[in-house]
Length: 66
Image (tube, rainbow, N blue to C red; front, side, top):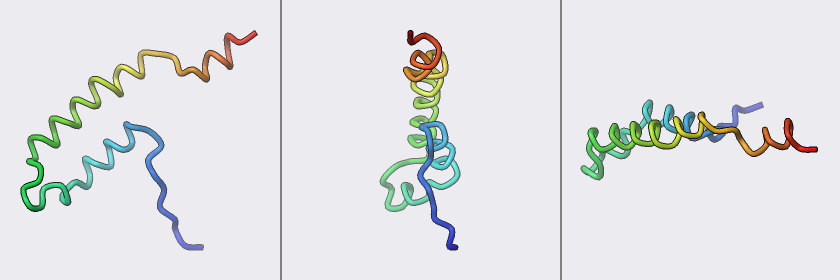
């Protein structure tokens, strides 16, 4: 069976993959390396980090639903 690529399962996984492979964004001077690094850092701090601090709605269903 052929390997079928899959999408990242979370924003964090997507950012990890973007860090590994973003050369296509640098072609034609569309984005700079600094801009990509800044965007990834911003997303990690402002979104990934903040989501880790809060319970997922499914956790409420699992543990607090009566």
